[in-house]
Image 1 (tube, rainbow, N blue to C red):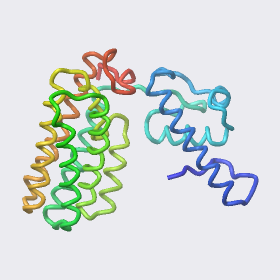
Image 2 (cartoon, rainbow, N blue to C red):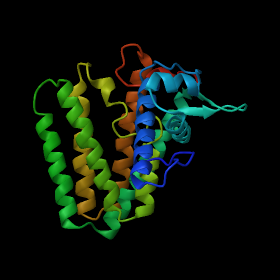
Image 3 (tube, helix red, strand yellow):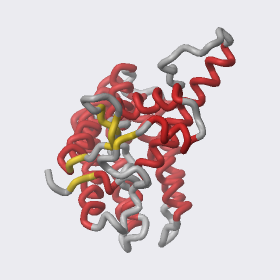
Image 4 (cartoon, one colour):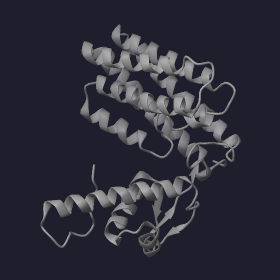
Length: 259
């Protein structure tokens, strides 16, 4: 969703408003990339004028991007004004993952209790079939991992829809947007480990079990399976912190080992 600029454009043209919103989104994406790549280290105070020069944009979309990243949690507002790049304790990240798992567990339970349209179940099953195809080779390359991240995100989105609750779907999206809390937030940690494929196969088995429990209207089982599934991300968090230099998880350098 385009972010409304903090200052109104000097024109009433709808095209100008859309362009301003697009610039704000671009600034937000680029700034997030700089932070997660370590080009703006933890604790760095963000200077608007420096970003104007670095990103080649005006101050209005950059201010909107800073505000949005502050809401996401990647930046923290400073007492005297402005923002700085945040750091996160291991506990904070673990809590965010736990929150997502709890909400997704609730979604799975409600889906099983309320029932799900056959078409939606079929779409989720087809998504898992595609993941199965990706995991067939004995070893996985970067393209396989990228494909898994995309399909995994889609499957989790479908699970949220199955609860038939717009409120819950929004809260799951909000929780998944917390730094490092998305369903595939730490999948990259596995990319070059010898048991990479095995871990994803386990996750895929859990996907199948959750979908089966929902289809069979086993509410308690669906919820417990979904909450257990989120613990894979918690395991990957520990792996990333053991060797952050070798980790391919963007932004892992922002996580402090101390709680």
